Image (cartoon, rainbow, N blue to C red; front, side):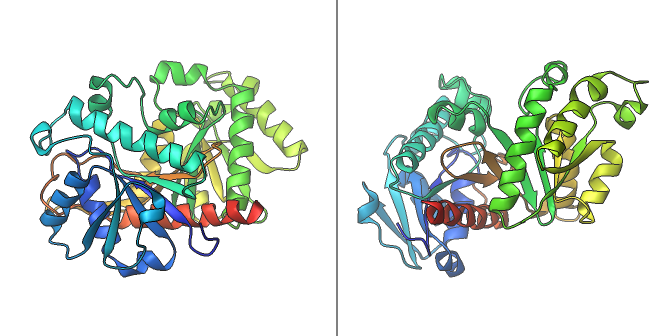
Length: 347
Protein backbone atom coordinates (compact mmCIF):
# COMPACT_ATOMS: atom_id res chain seq x y z
CA UNK A 1 0.00 0.00 0.00
CA UNK A 2 1.12 3.57 -0.65
CA UNK A 3 0.07 6.79 1.03
CA UNK A 4 0.54 8.70 -2.21
CA UNK A 5 -1.41 6.27 -4.35
CA UNK A 6 -3.88 4.06 -2.43
CA UNK A 7 -4.99 0.67 -3.72
CA UNK A 8 -8.73 0.59 -4.41
CA UNK A 9 -10.84 -2.54 -4.81
CA UNK A 10 -13.62 -1.92 -7.38
CA UNK A 11 -16.46 -4.42 -7.28
CA UNK A 12 -17.88 -5.35 -10.68
CA UNK A 13 -21.54 -4.88 -9.77
CA UNK A 14 -24.34 -6.90 -11.34
CA UNK A 15 -23.00 -8.62 -14.50
CA UNK A 16 -26.33 -8.00 -16.24
CA UNK A 17 -26.05 -4.24 -15.69
CA UNK A 18 -23.70 -1.47 -16.78
CA UNK A 19 -21.19 -1.89 -13.93
CA UNK A 20 -18.56 -3.87 -15.87
CA UNK A 21 -18.81 -1.48 -18.83
CA UNK A 22 -18.29 1.69 -16.80
CA UNK A 23 -15.39 0.01 -15.00
CA UNK A 24 -13.66 -0.68 -18.33
CA UNK A 25 -14.30 2.90 -19.48
CA UNK A 26 -13.02 4.39 -16.24
CA UNK A 27 -9.90 2.24 -16.01
CA UNK A 28 -9.07 2.87 -19.67
CA UNK A 29 -8.52 6.50 -18.69
CA UNK A 30 -4.78 6.86 -17.86
CA UNK A 31 -5.55 9.78 -15.52
CA UNK A 32 -7.12 7.34 -13.05
CA UNK A 33 -3.71 5.80 -12.44
CA UNK A 34 -2.38 9.18 -11.33
CA UNK A 35 -4.33 9.07 -8.05
CA UNK A 36 -4.91 5.37 -7.27
CA UNK A 37 -3.97 1.76 -7.96
CA UNK A 38 -7.21 0.10 -9.13
CA UNK A 39 -8.06 -3.57 -8.70
CA UNK A 40 -11.36 -4.93 -10.02
CA UNK A 41 -12.97 -7.63 -7.86
CA UNK A 42 -15.29 -10.01 -9.69
CA UNK A 43 -15.40 -12.47 -12.54
CA UNK A 44 -12.73 -12.21 -15.26
CA UNK A 45 -15.10 -13.50 -17.94
CA UNK A 46 -17.60 -10.73 -17.20
CA UNK A 47 -14.86 -8.09 -17.34
CA UNK A 48 -13.45 -9.50 -20.60
CA UNK A 49 -16.92 -9.42 -22.16
CA UNK A 50 -17.38 -5.80 -21.11
CA UNK A 51 -13.97 -4.95 -22.54
CA UNK A 52 -15.00 -6.34 -25.94
CA UNK A 53 -18.25 -4.36 -25.86
CA UNK A 54 -16.38 -1.12 -25.13
CA UNK A 55 -13.65 -1.93 -27.62
CA UNK A 56 -10.93 -1.31 -25.07
CA UNK A 57 -7.35 -2.12 -25.95
CA UNK A 58 -6.37 -2.53 -22.29
CA UNK A 59 -4.85 -5.83 -21.20
CA UNK A 60 -6.97 -7.77 -18.68
CA UNK A 61 -4.57 -9.10 -16.03
CA UNK A 62 -6.07 -11.85 -13.85
CA UNK A 63 -4.74 -12.18 -10.30
CA UNK A 64 -5.48 -14.23 -7.19
CA UNK A 65 -3.76 -11.85 -4.76
CA UNK A 66 -3.07 -8.12 -4.55
CA UNK A 67 0.66 -8.81 -4.76
CA UNK A 68 0.27 -10.13 -8.31
CA UNK A 69 -1.14 -6.84 -9.63
CA UNK A 70 0.63 -4.73 -12.23
CA UNK A 71 -0.44 -1.16 -11.64
CA UNK A 72 0.11 0.91 -14.77
CA UNK A 73 -2.02 2.43 -17.56
CA UNK A 74 -3.17 -0.04 -20.16
CA UNK A 75 -3.52 -2.90 -17.66
CA UNK A 76 -6.75 -3.73 -15.83
CA UNK A 77 -6.14 -5.98 -12.83
CA UNK A 78 -9.00 -8.34 -11.95
CA UNK A 79 -9.15 -10.38 -8.76
CA UNK A 80 -10.89 -13.32 -10.41
CA UNK A 81 -13.59 -15.04 -8.38
CA UNK A 82 -14.67 -17.24 -11.34
CA UNK A 83 -18.22 -17.27 -9.99
CA UNK A 84 -20.47 -16.97 -13.05
CA UNK A 85 -20.50 -18.22 -16.63
CA UNK A 86 -21.66 -16.34 -19.72
CA UNK A 87 -24.65 -18.68 -20.01
CA UNK A 88 -25.87 -17.78 -16.51
CA UNK A 89 -26.72 -14.14 -17.13
CA UNK A 90 -28.23 -11.93 -19.80
CA UNK A 91 -27.98 -8.17 -20.07
CA UNK A 92 -31.00 -6.39 -18.62
CA UNK A 93 -32.41 -9.49 -16.91
CA UNK A 94 -32.91 -10.16 -13.21
CA UNK A 95 -30.97 -13.27 -12.26
CA UNK A 96 -30.04 -15.07 -9.06
CA UNK A 97 -26.71 -16.06 -10.65
CA UNK A 98 -25.90 -12.43 -11.39
CA UNK A 99 -27.05 -11.35 -7.94
CA UNK A 100 -24.84 -13.94 -6.26
CA UNK A 101 -21.79 -13.03 -8.36
CA UNK A 102 -22.23 -9.37 -7.48
CA UNK A 103 -22.65 -10.19 -3.79
CA UNK A 104 -19.53 -12.35 -3.65
CA UNK A 105 -17.50 -9.56 -5.22
CA UNK A 106 -18.68 -7.13 -2.54
CA UNK A 107 -17.94 -9.55 0.27
CA UNK A 108 -14.45 -10.26 -1.08
CA UNK A 109 -13.66 -6.56 -1.40
CA UNK A 110 -14.78 -6.00 2.20
CA UNK A 111 -12.52 -8.80 3.42
CA UNK A 112 -9.55 -7.42 1.45
CA UNK A 113 -10.09 -4.00 3.00
CA UNK A 114 -10.60 -5.35 6.52
CA UNK A 115 -7.28 -7.22 6.33
CA UNK A 116 -5.54 -4.10 4.92
CA UNK A 117 -4.70 -5.74 1.59
CA UNK A 118 -6.37 -2.75 -0.08
CA UNK A 119 -6.90 0.81 1.15
CA UNK A 120 -10.51 1.35 0.11
CA UNK A 121 -13.42 0.01 -1.90
CA UNK A 122 -15.56 1.39 -4.72
CA UNK A 123 -18.77 -0.37 -5.74
CA UNK A 124 -20.48 -0.60 -9.12
CA UNK A 125 -24.30 -0.85 -9.07
CA UNK A 126 -26.19 -3.97 -8.02
CA UNK A 127 -29.81 -5.00 -8.55
CA UNK A 128 -31.61 -5.54 -5.26
CA UNK A 129 -34.09 -8.10 -6.64
CA UNK A 130 -31.30 -10.21 -8.17
CA UNK A 131 -29.43 -10.01 -4.87
CA UNK A 132 -32.44 -11.22 -2.91
CA UNK A 133 -33.28 -13.95 -5.41
CA UNK A 134 -29.79 -15.31 -4.72
CA UNK A 135 -30.73 -15.58 -1.05
CA UNK A 136 -28.83 -12.53 0.18
CA UNK A 137 -31.48 -10.63 2.13
CA UNK A 138 -30.01 -7.15 2.11
CA UNK A 139 -31.65 -3.97 0.83
CA UNK A 140 -28.44 -2.53 -0.58
CA UNK A 141 -24.69 -2.01 -0.34
CA UNK A 142 -24.89 0.00 2.88
CA UNK A 143 -26.55 -2.85 4.74
CA UNK A 144 -24.08 -5.43 3.36
CA UNK A 145 -21.12 -3.34 4.48
CA UNK A 146 -22.64 -2.69 7.90
CA UNK A 147 -23.22 -6.43 8.40
CA UNK A 148 -19.79 -7.68 7.37
CA UNK A 149 -17.87 -4.93 9.15
CA UNK A 150 -20.08 -5.24 12.25
CA UNK A 151 -20.90 -1.52 12.11
CA UNK A 152 -24.01 -0.35 13.94
CA UNK A 153 -24.12 3.37 13.19
CA UNK A 154 -23.81 3.96 9.44
CA UNK A 155 -25.26 6.57 7.10
CA UNK A 156 -25.42 7.29 3.39
CA UNK A 157 -23.72 10.49 2.21
CA UNK A 158 -24.28 11.74 -1.34
CA UNK A 159 -21.72 14.16 -2.77
CA UNK A 160 -21.81 16.23 -5.97
CA UNK A 161 -19.67 19.36 -6.11
CA UNK A 162 -20.74 21.60 -3.19
CA UNK A 163 -23.91 19.62 -2.41
CA UNK A 164 -23.53 16.97 0.28
CA UNK A 165 -26.59 15.13 1.60
CA UNK A 166 -26.64 12.58 4.42
CA UNK A 167 -29.67 10.50 5.38
CA UNK A 168 -31.28 9.65 8.69
CA UNK A 169 -32.89 6.62 6.99
CA UNK A 170 -32.67 5.13 3.52
CA UNK A 171 -34.15 1.84 2.30
CA UNK A 172 -37.27 1.57 4.40
CA UNK A 173 -40.96 2.20 3.79
CA UNK A 174 -41.99 5.83 4.17
CA UNK A 175 -44.24 5.03 7.17
CA UNK A 176 -41.28 3.40 8.91
CA UNK A 177 -38.98 6.29 7.98
CA UNK A 178 -41.10 8.68 10.06
CA UNK A 179 -40.64 6.47 13.12
CA UNK A 180 -36.86 6.49 12.59
CA UNK A 181 -36.69 10.26 13.03
CA UNK A 182 -35.38 10.17 16.59
CA UNK A 183 -33.10 12.48 18.53
CA UNK A 184 -30.50 9.74 18.95
CA UNK A 185 -30.36 8.82 15.26
CA UNK A 186 -30.27 12.45 14.11
CA UNK A 187 -27.41 13.18 16.52
CA UNK A 188 -25.47 10.18 15.19
CA UNK A 189 -25.90 11.36 11.61
CA UNK A 190 -24.90 14.93 12.46
CA UNK A 191 -21.68 13.70 14.09
CA UNK A 192 -20.93 11.35 11.18
CA UNK A 193 -21.32 14.03 8.52
CA UNK A 194 -19.38 16.60 10.55
CA UNK A 195 -16.42 14.17 10.68
CA UNK A 196 -16.82 13.25 6.99
CA UNK A 197 -16.70 16.89 5.92
CA UNK A 198 -13.51 17.37 7.92
CA UNK A 199 -12.02 14.25 6.31
CA UNK A 200 -12.83 15.83 2.93
CA UNK A 201 -10.90 18.95 3.84
CA UNK A 202 -13.62 21.23 5.23
CA UNK A 203 -12.14 22.53 8.48
CA UNK A 204 -15.32 24.03 9.97
CA UNK A 205 -18.35 22.39 8.36
CA UNK A 206 -21.72 24.14 8.44
CA UNK A 207 -24.56 21.63 8.61
CA UNK A 208 -28.22 22.25 7.85
CA UNK A 209 -30.86 19.84 9.17
CA UNK A 210 -34.08 19.37 7.23
CA UNK A 211 -37.50 19.21 8.81
CA UNK A 212 -39.65 16.13 8.33
CA UNK A 213 -43.03 17.80 7.89
CA UNK A 214 -44.11 20.56 5.46
CA UNK A 215 -42.57 23.91 6.44
CA UNK A 216 -40.68 22.05 9.21
CA UNK A 217 -44.10 21.74 10.90
CA UNK A 218 -44.69 25.54 11.19
CA UNK A 219 -44.27 25.53 14.95
CA UNK A 220 -46.20 22.31 15.49
CA UNK A 221 -49.12 22.91 13.12
CA UNK A 222 -48.22 19.97 10.86
CA UNK A 223 -46.55 17.46 13.13
CA UNK A 224 -44.59 16.92 16.33
CA UNK A 225 -41.29 15.41 15.15
CA UNK A 226 -39.53 18.75 14.80
CA UNK A 227 -40.24 19.85 18.35
CA UNK A 228 -39.79 16.47 20.04
CA UNK A 229 -36.88 14.95 18.09
CA UNK A 230 -35.11 17.23 15.60
CA UNK A 231 -34.77 20.45 17.64
CA UNK A 232 -33.36 18.64 20.72
CA UNK A 233 -30.81 16.85 18.52
CA UNK A 234 -29.71 20.09 16.84
CA UNK A 235 -29.42 21.87 20.18
CA UNK A 236 -27.31 19.10 21.71
CA UNK A 237 -24.94 18.93 18.72
CA UNK A 238 -24.60 22.70 18.75
CA UNK A 239 -23.73 22.74 22.47
CA UNK A 240 -21.06 20.14 21.73
CA UNK A 241 -19.38 22.38 19.17
CA UNK A 242 -20.94 21.37 15.86
CA UNK A 243 -21.94 24.29 13.58
CA UNK A 244 -25.47 23.08 12.87
CA UNK A 245 -28.83 24.73 12.19
CA UNK A 246 -32.34 23.37 11.89
CA UNK A 247 -34.87 22.14 11.38
CA UNK A 248 -35.20 24.04 8.11
CA UNK A 249 -37.89 23.47 5.49
CA UNK A 250 -36.22 21.40 2.72
CA UNK A 251 -37.40 23.69 -0.09
CA UNK A 252 -35.38 26.47 1.54
CA UNK A 253 -32.53 24.35 2.85
CA UNK A 254 -31.41 22.80 -0.45
CA UNK A 255 -31.10 26.04 -2.44
CA UNK A 256 -29.02 27.50 0.39
CA UNK A 257 -26.80 24.42 0.43
CA UNK A 258 -26.36 24.54 -3.33
CA UNK A 259 -25.38 28.18 -2.98
CA UNK A 260 -22.69 27.31 -0.45
CA UNK A 261 -24.33 28.50 2.76
CA UNK A 262 -24.26 24.95 4.17
CA UNK A 263 -21.54 22.37 3.59
CA UNK A 264 -23.89 19.43 4.22
CA UNK A 265 -27.60 18.70 4.56
CA UNK A 266 -29.15 16.12 6.90
CA UNK A 267 -32.18 14.62 5.12
CA UNK A 268 -34.81 12.80 7.15
CA UNK A 269 -35.51 10.01 4.62
CA UNK A 270 -34.39 8.56 1.29
CA UNK A 271 -36.29 10.60 -1.30
CA UNK A 272 -36.00 13.85 0.64
CA UNK A 273 -32.27 13.56 -0.01
CA UNK A 274 -32.11 11.77 -3.35
CA UNK A 275 -34.54 13.84 -5.41
CA UNK A 276 -32.84 17.24 -5.01
CA UNK A 277 -29.44 15.57 -5.27
CA UNK A 278 -30.22 13.89 -8.59
CA UNK A 279 -31.80 17.07 -9.91
CA UNK A 280 -28.33 18.53 -9.45
CA UNK A 281 -26.21 15.68 -10.83
CA UNK A 282 -28.36 13.95 -13.49
CA UNK A 283 -29.24 15.38 -16.92
CA UNK A 284 -31.61 13.65 -19.35
CA UNK A 285 -31.15 14.34 -23.06
CA UNK A 286 -34.55 14.43 -24.74
CA UNK A 287 -33.12 14.07 -28.26
CA UNK A 288 -31.05 10.94 -27.69
CA UNK A 289 -33.35 9.58 -24.97
CA UNK A 290 -30.27 8.89 -22.86
CA UNK A 291 -28.72 10.25 -19.72
CA UNK A 292 -26.32 12.92 -20.96
CA UNK A 293 -24.71 13.49 -17.56
CA UNK A 294 -24.74 11.26 -14.49
CA UNK A 295 -22.70 12.62 -11.62
CA UNK A 296 -22.68 12.07 -7.90
CA UNK A 297 -20.98 9.83 -5.38
CA UNK A 298 -22.38 7.70 -2.57
CA UNK A 299 -20.15 7.39 0.53
CA UNK A 300 -20.97 5.11 3.44
CA UNK A 301 -20.18 6.80 6.76
CA UNK A 302 -19.48 4.98 10.03
CA UNK A 303 -17.48 2.06 8.61
CA UNK A 304 -13.99 0.95 9.63
CA UNK A 305 -13.09 0.89 5.91
CA UNK A 306 -13.60 3.24 2.96
CA UNK A 307 -16.57 2.62 0.70
CA UNK A 308 -17.74 4.88 -2.11
CA UNK A 309 -20.02 4.18 -5.04
CA UNK A 310 -21.72 5.59 -8.08
CA UNK A 311 -25.12 7.03 -7.26
CA UNK A 312 -27.03 5.34 -10.05
CA UNK A 313 -28.45 1.91 -10.71
CA UNK A 314 -27.73 -1.00 -13.01
CA UNK A 315 -29.39 0.74 -16.01
CA UNK A 316 -30.72 -2.54 -17.40
CA UNK A 317 -32.26 -0.65 -20.33
CA UNK A 318 -28.83 0.18 -21.82
CA UNK A 319 -26.71 -2.67 -20.42
CA UNK A 320 -24.56 -4.31 -23.08
CA UNK A 321 -24.71 -1.32 -25.44
CA UNK A 322 -21.50 0.36 -24.29
CA UNK A 323 -23.25 3.72 -23.92
CA UNK A 324 -23.30 4.02 -20.11
CA UNK A 325 -21.69 7.13 -18.62
CA UNK A 326 -18.66 6.39 -16.42
CA UNK A 327 -18.00 9.85 -14.93
CA UNK A 328 -19.73 9.01 -11.64
CA UNK A 329 -17.44 6.00 -11.19
CA UNK A 330 -14.33 8.11 -11.70
CA UNK A 331 -15.70 10.62 -9.19
CA UNK A 332 -16.30 7.77 -6.71
CA UNK A 333 -12.73 6.57 -7.17
CA UNK A 334 -11.40 10.09 -6.56
CA UNK A 335 -13.32 10.39 -3.29
CA UNK A 336 -12.28 6.90 -2.20
CA UNK A 337 -8.63 7.76 -2.86
CA UNK A 338 -8.94 10.99 -0.88
CA UNK A 339 -10.57 9.26 2.10
CA UNK A 340 -8.14 6.33 1.95
CA UNK A 341 -5.14 8.64 2.02
CA UNK A 342 -6.61 10.40 5.04
CA UNK A 343 -6.94 7.08 6.88
CA UNK A 344 -3.41 6.02 5.94
CA UNK A 345 -2.02 9.30 7.26
CA UNK A 346 -3.80 8.75 10.60
CA UNK A 347 -2.29 5.29 11.13
